[in-house]
Length: 535
Image (cartoon, rainbow, N blue to C red; front, side, top):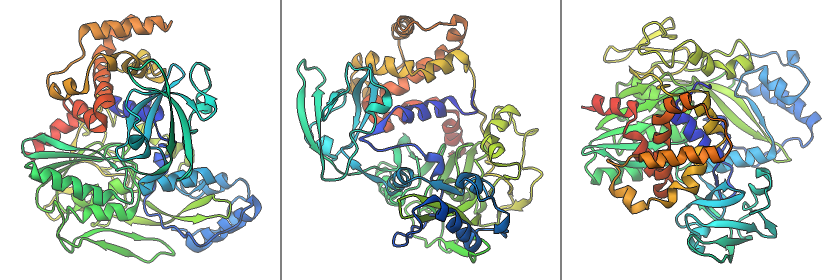
């Protein structure tokens, strides 16, 4: 069992089986903050020259003293792993996908789809995108993409995924079976630039408290945040829960731009410094949209980089309360250097420090593999699941810093929350993990449950809606028909989690990301703790 919350697992798996019109949604771990793009500078286009140029770049720009002669001249990845875990080589497709993801837009038609019974089921149509304008709707089934039939052919997923993606201005022809119809129709859709907000959800969670969830810090995050705050203020928001759980970071400027909306004028947000990079201070300019209201920030072990910049500034400056579990511990700044073939090097050039001077970067002295497994180690030693951190506070022996209000905070590996909330692992077992990995919960929601409930009914009954016993029994029959070996003892233990997942995915299907979080947050322990703290 990987050390992640059930909700995180569900979110991660949701994105692993969902695509936005040919847009790749992964590589979240690589969305490191602090990129600057030298678009007009191109380097080598063959591996031999790349290695030489990478070493030269390291020698001129790397954050610490390094003897370039001692570096291996072997594989590029092996070379970079000798430096730190976040200096990475990106192949051309990955570099392009990463830039699209952080820029908040992509070329495509603007849909999310799920592979159900070897057919592409449309699970979301982005408003104002090309597919939306063409009349593609939730629940439609895509049978053919150009000349390739994808329905009834039992094609591997890799044969289907990505075929809708293409350059702006080009067209894709889809054979579509509209929901409720018996005959398919041909649709020619011209691809365009599709804008995607990094705000997953923004709504009033109580009469005077708003909730905003941010998935990454992209080019337009601060603008999206301002728009969301203004809307919620009209609805009576005086307090804010800002959810940064599982937010792996993004642009440094996006984090500082958002911090400007929360912090008083002339307050230091963060500073960066490296061997070849002089200290650079980022200062709040004041006049932000939410500079005075009560603030709670939610973080967990997957909150990294730009998320830690924002949480660290709020904590150091006594601006709000940090709730959850210790953040990832990524305090290194990357600059991107492109090569002639479209690939790129993300090289660590500096460290960032919180206003009190804390370095949040956790140690990577034990090597790349140990660093990658560090979150699992936290789970194994109980840091993520203990009722109290009194015996598991891994930062307590680190350097202590004191805020203006006398609160002790720590450096040395992530942001330690002011209020700790343990991971809920009740009901997690091998059988439940198998249900998730085989996507059977998703299949049942999209194939059966979504047809039983209308969006209007779910919206009207959000607070009282629960999965009925008959729905659950049908789910058991559904997995029986899949010829899956059932451990009934483990199934019974996981029933509350399964019903919760079914409900959340049902709301996501009909009401989008906002609906998903509205449903999940009703019983979320961190959200409840935040509401209590804001009182």
